[in-house]
Length: 270
Ligand SMILES: Nc1ncnc2c1ncn2[C@@H]1O[C@H](COP(=O)(O)OP(=O)(O)OP(=O)(O)O)[C@@H](O)[C@H]1O
Image (tube, rainbow, N blue to C red; front, side, top):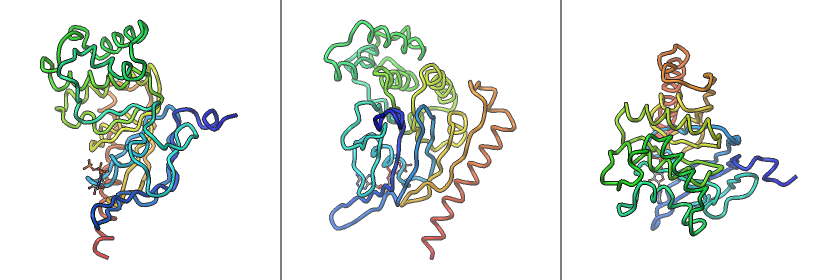
């Protein structure tokens, strides 16, 4: 059996990874030695204080940067260049202003294959429908609200059916109601076609609502300081946010995040 088949194509292994950025003579250690595995098809959130290395970890997984030491493996294979099987969604939707919603969504397919097939176009329309953008497929980005732009960007990140979806605070710039709506839509899409998702957020309640596990990172140099298992039943509906179990997990997340920050403050004063 190949390494990929053993690990599952979307499984992520972070093996003793350290990341140090060097600028002029200054060295900034973003990640201290970090080892963690994400299972295939799992929804994992990363939370932690600002600057603790969440985006850095995401970029290392995507192959957009390389570790200073250690190794990242996806599907059992070492990541040495940008992963073709992964898709990355950022906080800014970065749609191309001169392309319609449909053509923006199809762009990754064009980059991959040159020309979208009939099946690709059908899938893009399906995603547009699932994202509630059916009346806007031929509109341009400037005609959309912020939430609609982000919906289009999520559809774009899914159109190639990636094994691994890496999301860096995709809903961070949206108001709370739009964010909650998009959380629900993202879960529906993930439940319809499960894939490994690594989701960076500053919102503990968003992490609880979405995730199977929440990785809490300590302040820079970051490492995984705590793992919270979210054993809430799926499919999750908006009502779950008012349950005692949900709110207990949010409370635990807060305590863990405070502990992660305090750990750094203690170290800084030692
Ligand atoms: N290309 C780079 N060159 C130099 N330093 C960098 C680079 N990228 C990140 N860093 C530094 O590494 C540390 C971790 O940054 P990173 O963006 O991963 O943190 P983060 O946890 O995602 O932060 P935030 O929550 O504020 O978005 C920071 O101190 C940052 O300044």
